[in-house]
Length: 356
Image 1 (cartoon, rainbow, N blue to C red):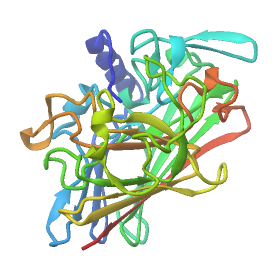
Image 2: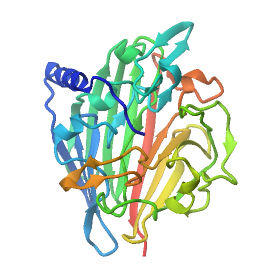
Image 3: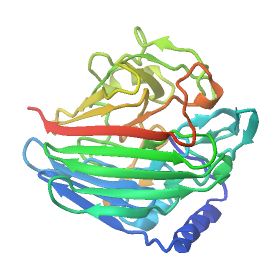
């Protein structure tokens, strides 16, 4: 989902000032395990690069991104970053919790998206741990969100751990602890994937299967109505594999919708399988979250990326596992409220492989 920020120069200056105040330098970090290599930056706890071979053994980068850290500080599409404190949209940039009405900062029309103008994607994270090699190379980023940041209540300690495991697996573990007040927390990892290579054009021929029988319908502002609807008979039905482009023309601009994942609440469940026949690459995703936002980079237009390649709409797809959008304003949705003494834990497991 695209980001619309106002006074962006001020925002970037403020975020860099935060990094200076915490004496955290913004850098690039790499993990390698077997055929899989992943690079990160602590600006936004962002995935910068994911390199692995195709069916011919040729290495390629399947994550959209930029050549320099400076370009990430100017990014307006959340490319590869961790978004929060609350991912996705909050209607009217407001909610009520325990009888207190909170007003947030709108950054998409009258609504708040991905935590506000200076969300977790626009701050410098501390590198808490960095283990380059061994059985499970990993990096842990940490961020302390203060009470009132972007209008959200309570101080929050957040960590994101990226770990490579044997078998070309990447795990993402997002944790958060509310320190003094109840607060909504809904983090998401916002990598733009193109299994053919980041510079290979659109993803309309990639085959997708999503293990969800329902989705949450939207109003004209892309805010959930609060209803649940069956995917059957709609372009949202990916219970059986379909190419992204097979029914995308039945939608206004592409996919940007939250799916209600099948499976037990809180348990690790399979989310989706993505296949690129030309490269042979396959990506499987599992999570413990109740939903996933399937987004086909509809608002990505004329964005200069790595090597000068210009990204366009449908040049990638995002699978953002999450709590449901605008849950704070829909009591019938799974709660995203975290109370002091309780820990938020969001697990993603990516498995990459090759098919003929």
